[in-house]
Length: 309
Image (cartoon, rainbow, N blue to C red):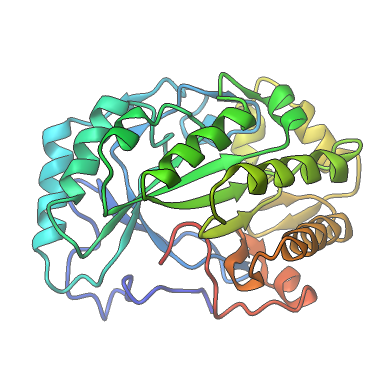
């Protein structure tokens, strides 16, 4: 059965709108039963991305046009008003980084972050590769969760163009954490480049040595090869390394790295993080197969991944 959060009931059970404000807020529940993904809510305040990651799925989503643009702020705030006034909606985290980088337009996002401070039931999730966190640090908020996407320095150099370098992302997370925010980390997508264990070990050690305390949780992911992404991607060197250098696996969520290599990657991270004293229960995998969860002996019913409570 597909995984469902309590805040996203089936159509028969729903007692509130399935979306708010022209789908500005809507549930993400696309993943098939073969893929583990606790469904979550999106805040679609903007589309596209200023960064130029070669593997970005938004290339396919927007048919090659990733030029960032945001929705009219008054409409976004109005949709949030409707959510906040709806007593039947359970406490929910709204992910603002599904169709854009959450800090693509900092001045707009600052207004949205402030809007969440008007209530204490729901929270906003920021997901970013930016290090532009000045407005967050200057005025700490209680209803915002800061999550940043991290990768090995060599992977970022090859394929995460126009983003803040991993070292700067960690420094930004440190500043945000010191300001009192909950901080989460996504190490995703993990690429098996030559010497990948050393490259990722280095970034994990840097993460834990720089942050004043452990992040709330860490979500792991490997490349997801969607057909539309491949069609619109200008640089396919990442695709060739992930899916052609070794036999790939076709899944309900696109191509994935060969199963045994993927398993080795996850096992490496679980072992490394646990050796640093990080609680196994606070590590998760993003859009991974049910088979992989079972093979690693992980509990699919008690997931603490990036986009949910």
